[in-house]
Amino acid sequence: MYLRNYLAEFCRATVEGYPLKGYFLWSLMDNFEWADGFTKRFGIHHVDFATQGRTPKWSAAWYRELIRRNALV
Image (cartoon, rainbow, N blue to C red; front, side, top):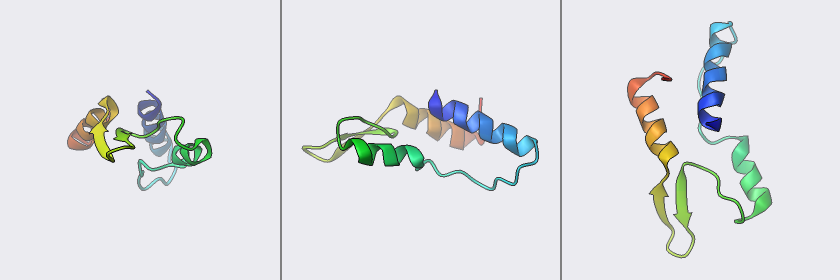
């Protein structure tokens, strides 16, 4: 929901005339992960620290669909 709401506000800002050219999913939120070490999980993939394997979370599928449609539904 955080990502969806953030992008909804991004869209609203562009409609209001703010000169926003793009969005990178990497954001300030990633800096919170650095501060917390590995105690909290952020991002759209779950990382198994032992194997370094990555498993997409539900948000990864949602974001992929957002990109495919090029629309926030």
